[in-house]
Image (cartoon, rainbow, N blue to C red; front, side, top):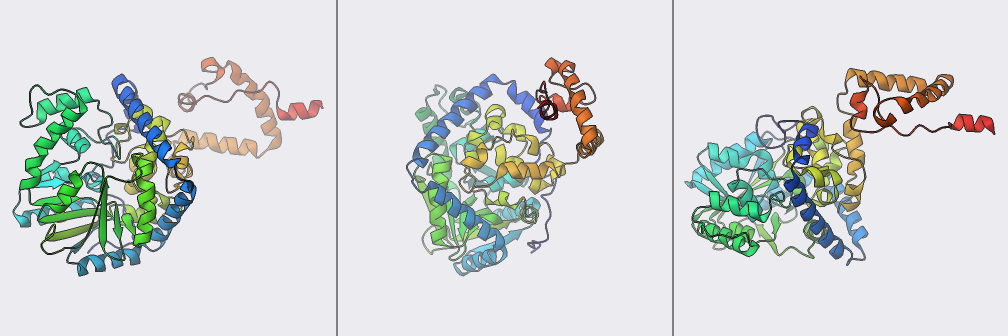
Length: 475
């Protein structure tokens, strides 16, 4: 065991999917030029927002549920060490085996070794953000193991050699015509006369996966929740593929972020009301699968739980940032974010896109490795209003912006502004001089070089004809 809560280390470089190849502004520039992508995103997020809003409006106590979820998550963070030890003890007592992984490298090595011990060369997978985070598929392929995604959207992404762009709907950036082309090109045994009718596409995927479900002896999953008092793991999903993966194979390996633990069954009730409404706009998830260790003659006979840190202790160590670990991966913040709706998830460079990704990814990797993400927001506050566990993402974005290393010219300008505002006479002269800004820059709303770098992406406020000081003096 090399994981010790309270000794924070960020996620390692060179493995996993938490860092992009370019900054958010550069990646967003490419995304904004893709008209089809923007149409796909606008249609999908608008549809999800509408469904979610209608079912949330049915609950008179929605705000009380949000408060309960937030309080429960705060309790978990304050007692994470003891809850994880309790979970480990209960899973072990029920016949499971618990492994602790300090980072992505350890987690991938543990899972690869467990699969090799079974003699299997293929695994079926339940949709999992944790395994995407650590780059498990890439590690398995490098080790000679074939991973097969069974969630329809994840399968589309995998067959298209693509990357997920949404927490809940990984292929949200694809329309049905594009999906048809991916299936025709990459899906074995597909009908060449395949149409882009959604039921036809789903049937093609079902036919492709059915034999795989019945002939693969090892499955890998994530977990939405782990109940400490009983050692029970829970996965919620909408298609039934997860149920197949969690019940048919002989060996089940679950990779769970350490923040996913909940104390008890009554606590789980709160989240099972919050999650489906905030995520898919459903009153409850069509499939909620729960299992506790191993039951002889029923389900997998070998169960392994890999508890993953991979930077979470570093997040936990920051009092102002640790609430990012409250996230239940509902994606509500993505669906209301004006920035995400226009750029999509790939621009964020991380498996966690959108507002929550803008605060979670920099903390998992260290802010320097994702320095542009805290600025991928207008700070409109829509994400805070939509979050079912009340994560104050806007305040956290400002907090992380203060951690970013700012250019020397910007630091000098801010020091000069602070000095000016601290000296009334100098400030009054600056106000009078500011009227000259009406003739400076683009439409009088920009600044000349070298300050134009700041106003290239924002306008200066309109300078009033009369300052408050002048108005006061004249009266």
